[in-house]
Length: 346
Ligand SMILES: *Cc1c(COP(=O)(O)O)cnc(C)c1O
Image (cartoon, rainbow, N blue to C red):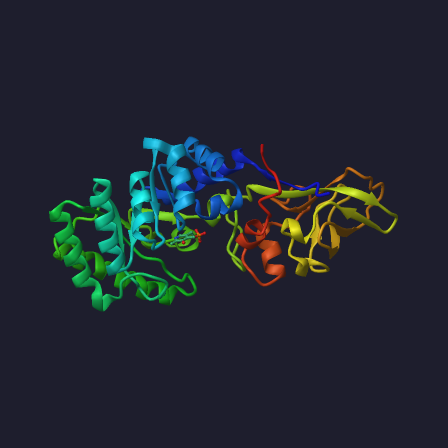
């Protein structure tokens, strides 16, 4: 039987959000809550972030965003940026969401959804500044903005923002993207649009490069204490969630803990990391479907707690340490945690 739980430290989340907001001011911070707040549970995360002063949330998928809006009500604006069908867009608009729009056909669907719901759709127009992951290409941008301006006059949409997403792979590429972004904003103004909110940067660029902040920054990783893979520690930021399991069987050489690959522990971690135990860091030797084996420590007993990832208080790796051990990012170990593992808020 699994003895695992994902322990989510909401005071740590609040501290991270405060640290991020201090760093980004006067730019506002949109706390990214995609994938059910990176599998930590939207409602408690949103409530805690609001306590720490957050007034914007956003994510890719409509369900996470709708849940965030349900919790936040009028206390925060919530944006969803996945391109969806007309009926889904209508549901999003009825739920009070703002929509990211990076496609001419989608703009038309959002406008008719707004007419259907009898609301004005608040939209953030997305320019593709080189990442080629959705967004209107520069050569189509002027026509797109002209159409958005016509829909504004008609009363179905209100263009509240212009945005893009950058690779954060090299400063030089990001600078080229930023120049393209600035041109797109200026072209949008020429088309008669008056977007109040410009947003371009996510955690790393926003933290390290003030000139990328614009009016709003979209921060996922750093709010949850996840540093970039191969990136530096971020002062004032620590992982919010710990994945813990109990010892189910202790032998002289090895203990077995009640968590395995079906609970979301990547089996490729075996032999590659040391996890946190009451006796200090110990090698994770095997990951089986329902249990895993860890090198023993003196006095190990059934019921002892082992920490697979967390802030490091017990010698455990951080989510990013785990990601790096298997060639991926720090979000991955968190997103892999099975929905059947209880989330416990502390
Ligand atoms: C996930 C996401 C973010 C957050 O990125 P981090 O690097 O985790 O801060 C920002 N913008 C968009 C469009 C995203 O999808």
